[in-house]
Amino acid sequence: MKMQSQRKAYGETLVQLGRENKNIVVLDADLSKSTMTCFFEQEFPDRYFEMGIAEANMISFAAGLSLTGKIAFVNSFAVFSTGRPFDQIRQGVAIGKLNVKICGSSAGLSDFGDGATHQSVEDIAIMRAIPNMTVISPCDAIETKKAVRFAAEYDGPVYIRVSRNDLPDIFPDDMEFTLGKPVVLREGNDITVFATGTMVYEALVAAEKLSSLGISARVVNVSTLKPVDDESIIKLAEGMKGIITAEEHSIIGGLASVVTYALRGKGIPVESIAINDEFGQSAGSHDELLAHYGLKADNIVEKAKALC
Figure (tube, rainbow, N blue to C red):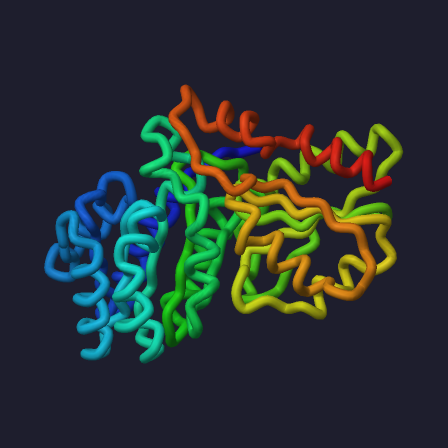
């Protein structure tokens, strides 16, 4: 499968949007070469704001720009763009439903070398808990491009989460992004695997392995984590022997919470692949961390075998 960078796709899409709409502005917190907003800076230096390591001020500044009619994209590592300026996001952006877009780059464990301080295992939970916030976790570079375009057109606060590392292309170039709608990537009739972000590919690999064991797995990409179409989740879970959720995030407040809440009272067994209420750590590679925290296709296979 073709591998592409979500970060690069994000940066390139910002440049395209900047050419189409003069109201697009971009802010960064001293990480433009990592978030890839450096592309926008090169082409539109008068619409790019380097805010330094001052994330709270950056959010407040973006809120002010949005009040003048600008569409402000705010950027940093996911752990910094959601945690440090939480109060400013809540008070200054979300309450007023201001048109500010927040990108959490190097999300999850993908900044494998820098350890717990730079790895965001709770950012989805933080942003989902804020009223008026839309939360999107695309699974590949192609969906990232579509999600960023959606965010630019959507009037209100949006959080987009992207990985630091290259990911396999899952969608075709002409895919359509629809907010709130889970997308079936593979049909099956024994279990449904709901996955988000980097774990979508692992779910597809697991489904192939399960097929050889006589277990049919439906794989569903849940890129919108808020708002959530509960009825679609219920429909995709009905008639199954069990459900598995898979996410590179804490088991608290992320996809596991989304799916189990939607399926409350339905009597369908649910198992979850997630980080079990602990911080990340430094490692030699992203894949090493995924394996350590049980976030690989084989972990999904074992859960599916137990359910069936």
